[in-house]
View (cartoon, rainbow, N blue to C red):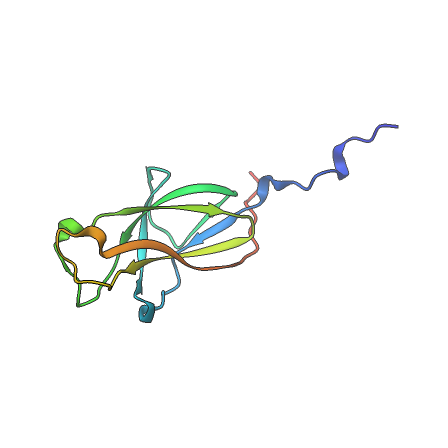
Length: 129
């Protein structure tokens, strides 16, 4: 007797994870807000949440560091990439990490890097098209 695949694999096509920037990161850990400028090399309008099917994505971030000790020129405030491996039912909160280990001046863009500062369980399902 042959049974067709109705009860076989669960439908993974609607599973997703979320990359988020809506929470205020912990300033005491030198974490600041950041915004997304590009996703996989394509320009995007920054928004609080990005629902994505599981996989690897390259996010380009611009930092919003407002620390008084930051003395770099505007030209040094360049966007940076972070590759995020998105898993189903996970939420990843991003931020700009201000590297306070030395004084940054002039055109030194090493003063920050994008980071995932919090990862948590989160139910996520992509809408059925």
